[in-house]
Length: 315
Image 1: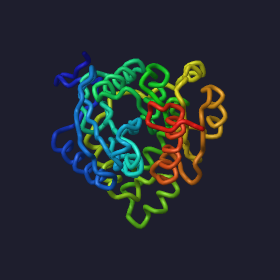
Image 2: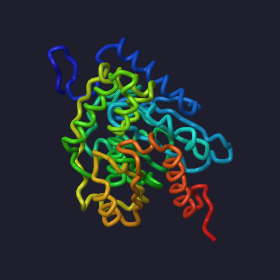
Image 3: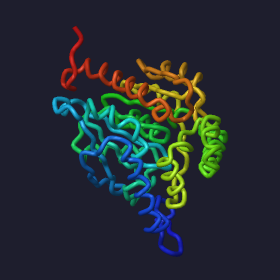
Image 4: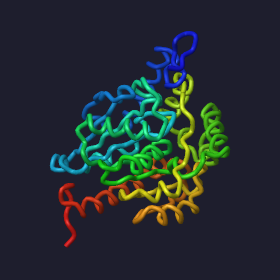
């Protein structure tokens, strides 16, 4: 067990101190308030620690039996990142948003889980603890790698996978890290400059006060202890049989959208792939109405082929 001289493990994420942790939670709560109200929150135990879960909707009681949506956020944040999406998704389906252990949030990591096999085991254990036998899995950025990895290694619980400008398709390049640091510095720019910087960087963090505050506090409050994930090989992607939907921003710096638009459907049988204009790494934040509608339509199409999922069969 890797430790420092103070007994703090080097291989798991942690908060710097309780005061900064509580400030981060307060900033997250302000962002959660912009989305749907959670029906409840719960903690589930896994081999890698405690996973905090937010449960939303559906607003229509007759939709309670439909196949639920599980949301996996990106690196450096928590489930509050889904604030533009929870209302629309939970209007039609049960929605569960998981705080990933190893990221800032209300989960508590106790064992490393950045390795593909461990990451897949964590998610499978969390879904099992929630009593979810079949789910539509949605992941953004690093969460996109997690859901693609799940489809490759442990697909049994998955009705579908939607990957939003995901990791896992290409090696994370220098241009992405430069964009991350530039975006962080831009959050401290004078207010009058922020709209122009947000447009130039394709970065909504800069102009959404609650999102900006959460990111700024999170950088100070939390210490990461994991490497960037390695991309899946062509053979690994080609092994995926789960219905798959890839959505990318036209100006993404994490992937090369045109390259993946051609590559992924060739490797993953039946996969859908789409590029959203006028956005970079956050299509579900920049264009939530469009992305929400298309995700729900995709899930409806999948469910319509499976009467047990609560959908309708095609005539």
